[in-house]
Amino acid sequence: MIAVKLRKMDALNRELDQLIIKAGGQEMNPDELKLLDVQQDIVEVEAQLKEVKASWLKLQTSLRAQSNKRTQQLSDINYSRKKLLLAEQKAIKIEAQLEEVMNENREIVRSLSALNTRLDSASMELFKTRQIHEKGEQECVVAHHQATERLRDAEMTVMTLEQELKDLGKEIEDCKQEVLEKHREALSWETKCKMSTEAKKFKDEETTQNSEIGIMKAEIHRMQVRYGQLKRMQEKLVHDLENTVHHRENIFESVNAREKVYGGKFKTRSTVQHKINELKNKLKVVFSEISQAEKSLLEIDTAQKLLQAEIENKKHHIEEEKLQTNLIRAETEQASMLKQENLDYIVRHQYRARRYRALANAQQLPKFRNEILIQADLQRQREVNENIVAVVETLQQDFPTQKYNLNKIIQLLK
Image 1 (cartoon, helix red, strand yellow):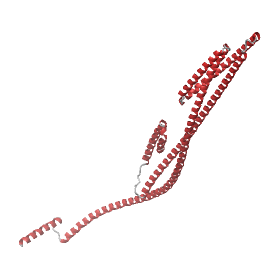
Image 2 (tube, rainbow, N blue to C red):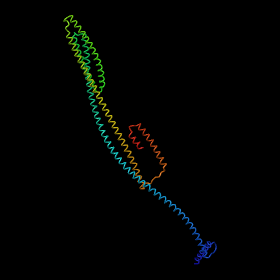
Image 3 (cartoon, rainbow, N blue to C red):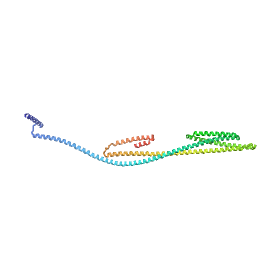
């Protein structure tokens, strides 16, 4: 017990010492101690009051900043509402434009269908024209072959006539030299007939061997050359005939004179006259055959010219059909390019409409960029597009067959 009390006394002494220390090392009564405690409490309260005033100032500053921020947010909200209203109006306009573009697209599709129908009909007409042209070519080939055969026959006839003219020349020469040698003349005619038969046989074999259509033009040229030779030979024959007639008249006069002088020794006048008449008849036949050959040549030449004119007409008609087809193809390509342009326009406006709807529904926040940077990017993109367009135009000049595809690229760039 004593120990416990001593410990309590020690504790009380320590507390007393602490109170004395707090009182400034002086012992005070309880009222003074309470006053001192109150003063300390006042000091502490004043310090706390200063801290509270500082925090109050901070709160007022923060409240002012929050008020300014709230005002800015309200102005931003009003601005965003105005932009949203403008975006909705633009979206309505774009939807109206999109509807117009869709209507135009439907019109273009109908136009393309009509153009495709016209192209099909033009293709069918071109096919029919080609069939008619092929048929005309076949008829031309057949007619040309027939004309060639007729030319060959005419050539054979002319060659026969030429040989007969030669024989007649020899016969006239024999008549000039030996009118009274009938036996020799008969032998000469027999030889001439054999030669004519052999020449005709040789010409028939030559005509059979050379009956291909590929040498038609050469044979026509040869016929023309031969015709010129026959004309010259005809002129020569006419000249020889005139000389023969003069010679015959001289012989006739000489025979008449001898008959008058010697009486009935020269009874061969009628025989010579009969032979001369036969020669005249043969010459007339030869001339008629030559005229017939000339007419045949003229008819063949006329038929050939008609065939060539018909071929030229067919070629001109085919060229017109090709031109019409090219025009239709150009219209189709132009319509396809216009359709592609409208589709690109529709896609761009649909993309913009989706963007405006996303902005209106607050699904996507708008990105604010500097106007100067936007203009610089736009100018740079335009320069790049102009360079690419220049390159594509150069490619159009170098590769005209790819004009349609290159035009699509140019249209996309522009």
